[in-house]
Image (cartoon, rainbow over all chains, first blue to last red; front, top):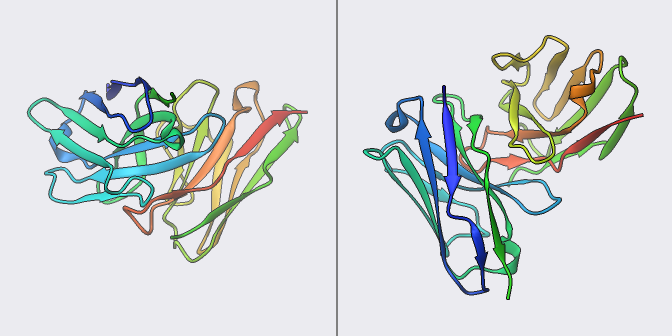
Length: 119
Length: 108
């Protein structure tokens, strides 16, 4: 069974940093591109960042470029999101999601971890 | 950026009736469109990909249609568990994925 479990969320002050993790199991993690998607309270879904299976290709939404860093450790079946210079508008539930190869849509999502940026 | 616009924002339908949700892209996305269902406190769940292919385990009452810029999600006979928020997503311009703002399907 495919499982994605996020962790690392919490309350952080504006300008602070946080590192999110996503533990994957039930599939060959190293064969899949992965993404982070966020959802502000009461709002819709926003794509944040993508990383290819071997970390060769990395992309960011303009809203987080230069502040967030996506990475992965295929030996540990884990995906990460390092978030620096956090702003109030970064407050959201952050989901990791698996991308279907030769498809591009997201077939499995984790349950999400809440990040709250507030003083 | 490809902008996805969903309508209506809220749809009120009685159980057993048909629901039709729309999604429009600001430019052609071919058939590279997915639909997701999200219930309160849960992660999104993939319903439809390729504009019209049901994901594994999705009931046949869910169907998708369209191509280019106009897409539709139809739920033929609403069950109580179908009341949720539905999002469309284009992946034609991957990895610059974009989602619609969502349609809330509520019980009439």
